[in-house]
Amino acid sequence: MTVPTTFWRLAGVSYVQYVTKASSTLRAALKEPAKSKALAQETFSYNKSVWSNGEQGAKKLTDSLAAVGK
Image (cartoon, rainbow, N blue to C red; front, side, top):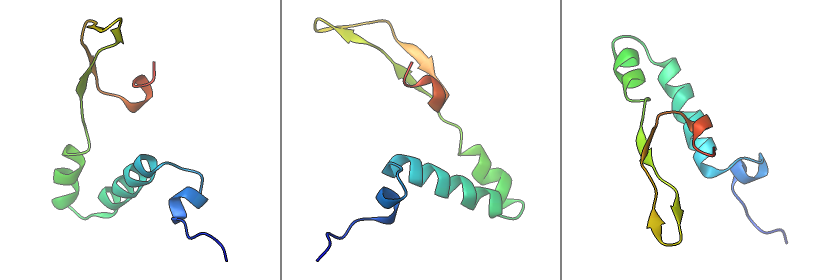
């Protein structure tokens, strides 16, 4: 018997990647005025800081998923 798993794991993506893609696709499929309202909710930003030796470094505003890992 095989171990049950979720389809996003079978596709080789993380849960966060799956949810991001699904929500972007849903927002793009909406009709106006709901589409513009939903697209406004798609943007995000948060503060990122690096910790070393138990000390928090300077905070940096991050507004792009591509910039998160850098």
